[in-house]
Image (cartoon, rainbow, N blue to C red):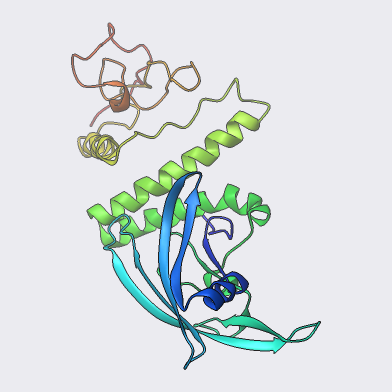
Length: 260
């Protein structure tokens, strides 16, 4: 999904230069409520007329923490009522900027254009489309790289995001009572087991819906789950569809499929 200005850490040149008037070094922090979520150190270097930023990025999924030390030069233009107005110089494109941003999973502070950031108000349409395009890209990566853990994890995360958007659209539609939510297993491990069970059934010559659809009740809608059942017990893997786990007396929804 597109990164947004509102979800990025922001450095304001006016606030930072005002702080530097009181002290040549300090910290900038961002928080959520009473909790501090990020802190960086800064030092004003008068000889170079700019700020040295120092911080450590947190390691995300498959990412190691990274120590960052980067100089951001200042530039000045005449102010409307006398004096000068300071600007950051974006380290990438060299343009004058009043603010620099560091979005989630990015290591550097850059201007909005260099990071490709949008405002929340611009993202409604993109938010409805991008997750499905990302899921398609992740699927293509699996085809290219094979069944590696990294490729599969990316595919799983992309499917989860797409399912969240799909369920929002279902809830907002006129057919919400007729359409079941898209359910994705809560963990990658459960999703992977379900995926490989489906592959195994196909290798054995069984149709994807040879055992019909899951008869369990979906928590989110109260209706039937309708995921592919993994056996005659009529349950999908997500709802405990291992042999002997809450199995009803056969699944009346099993498809009549000839197995060669």
